[in-house]
Length: 104
Image 1 (cartoon, one colour):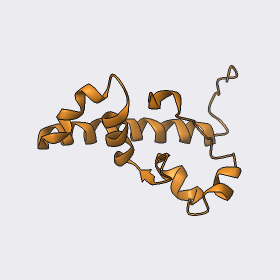
Image 2 (cartoon, rainbow, N blue to C red):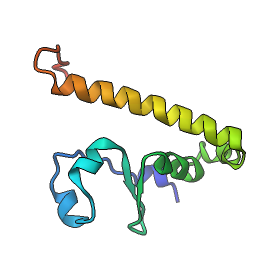
Image 3 (cartoon, helix red, strand yellow):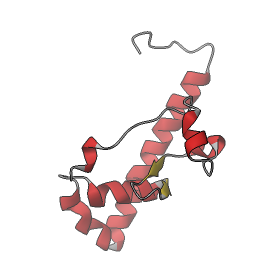
Image 4 (tube, helix red, strand yellow):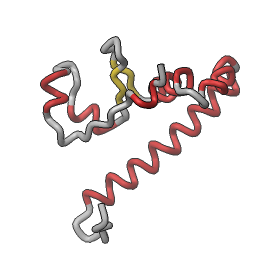
């Protein structure tokens, strides 16, 4: 099964996700990435990265990197950088004085 075709992105503004999964907290979801597996297991933060590395075709070829301590540190470093960028973008979206891309 190609999991990449079954991934669905749900914006925080779609309140139906919190009805379907009452164990989700909107503030927690805003703070870090969440992924719900087909088994309804909820993964958060870096665990999402590890799951995707192990399961997505093409990327899964690199899953052996997670077997070493240095590989885990590298994936955590990249995750942290993505989180920093996400926080910058979120702050920009919340900023009334910041220019916004009207092409969205």
